[in-house]
Image (cartoon, rainbow, N blue to C red; front, side, top):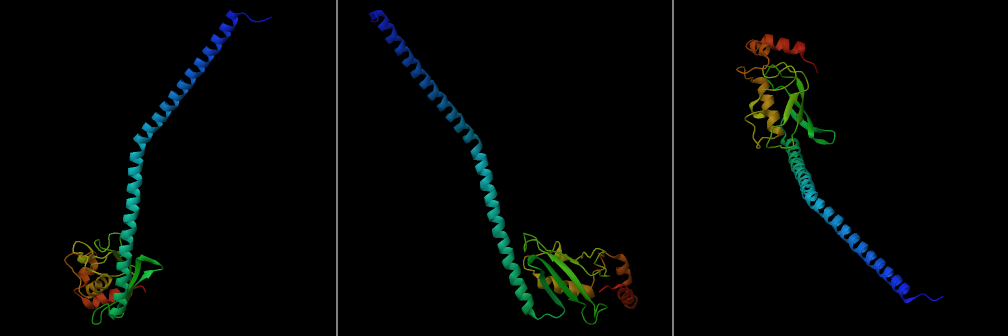
Length: 213
């Protein structure tokens, strides 16, 4: 039995409605995709500048720190060569293992002082800001002296407020060697040593009895 004209028209109309509905769905899906993409882009614009800035700052700091460390390393290598070629008697210093930022130094007591014949070891630690910041220097060997405390720290102006980038390891060691024989008793860290200094014989006797190699 052949379908009537009305039936064919209904079927055709139904097919067209489905096509239009599919087209609407496609348009709606495309709009949703554009909206999602736009939201993602906005989120990216909101987050990425800060993240990019943070990453750039971190990379800049790493680059700056690397350059600074390289500059300090070069300076310390030069100072090591200067010290080795200076020919100064009674002082020496070398990096501890392969770390150029930590040195071990030695100082011999100057002839004609109560420290003559005694050898002291010191530690030198250089900050990242060296030579514009003073190194941290202290006695490793216990030292009975008016300007040295029980922990080995030294009261010396060039290691504190009088520090200058013109100073180097050699000048530091020479200054400490000089300080041994010529203490500043006006600002002692060890008051017992400062009081005993006026009696050199008693001072030397106490010094030798407490000296630890």
